[in-house]
Image (cartoon, rainbow, N blue to C red; front, side, top):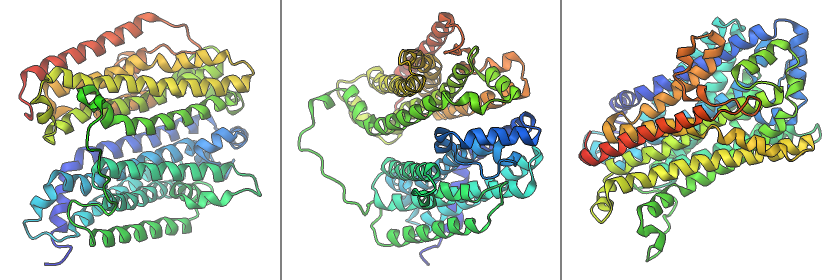
Length: 533
């Protein structure tokens, strides 16, 4: 038996366990890329219109920081994929991080690796199986994305380069996650460490791209996301840059194997810090415990939302230059918001931020299920804590956390927008544009609460619903789907504020739906067995 014995069967098992996440994640990414291409090809049919739009993007520091630079203003592909290229690369990286951590550190933490190790399983087989799965997934993503973009009317060579750029980012962060899994002792810590690296390299890329000619533009070359953009799909297709990404992924993955060979099963190379001898008073309640479990993640999300809010606020004042094309103006107005184009842009961007806040809310509520299956809920419920009270503690953090995220983003965007406009009174309207999204966010979180209480094996419905909402939002207006289909998304009923008149009825209705779903979940948790399916 060698250190890699059993890698094949373990990889097939990992594929079986993660097939829903793999298929769903890849499908969503491919569809969004194809939809972006389809929309832009029709919006900018002439060369002057493309050059004008590309010049507006490159002329805005906020847009360049958020999305990157367009290297060929005449290329329809470069213009079409500028937003999807950078933001999509982040989601590709997150998908790879989640998969690697799930099949390495999370399995060790749950005891599955130790159980499998009782068979003819090599020491390095779990890590090799996880990286092999992610390698296959990113190759499939690259090829499917290239095929979809080519079918949407973009050049085939550039489409393949774009797909490979996405796949390269996924491989790079799979390797980063593999190293993080060796350093930490918990799956959440490994995921958080990988996410911090992702945030840092995104900022490095942004600083490098916005630097002046004599500034630190070299910082973009320290980032895997920067390498994906320097690949320049549809603007030269510099294939040699892919060698940098693959070399980095191979070197970091090799380091992960060396680290795994030098640590004990279940241990991490970073020493765990001993906790205090006595618990603080706040941990005497389930709400205090829930806050302690979620506060670190909430801090990271809050910082990210504040940064994105500043960018969105700065971009809103420049959006009129970006959307000189009448067709582009019509698209933004149809997707969300009315009246002023800047207000329409803010309404659309806060709709995207609300989707991200929904992901946080879903993640917090899902912690209930992981606490239950990890047998950590039973000691809490064995004391004087009821099931409903325990459940409500995590739900309260989800509701308060999503409110904080959208509130912080609204304040940051409002101040940035008001400062650029020379009127800080505009900030209040922008804050309201963020907070008005909350009832729809709460509906998705409450859907997970209902599934947790009534049918806990189906708690993944939260992620499925979020993916469906994203697809409806991206494709619905472009494909001119019937109104009843668009109305399936709770975000379709949110007032498009600022710009449109505020209506209290949909806000109250969505809040009532969230309350009913939550009540159903609380009723279910009182009746079902703890740890049951």
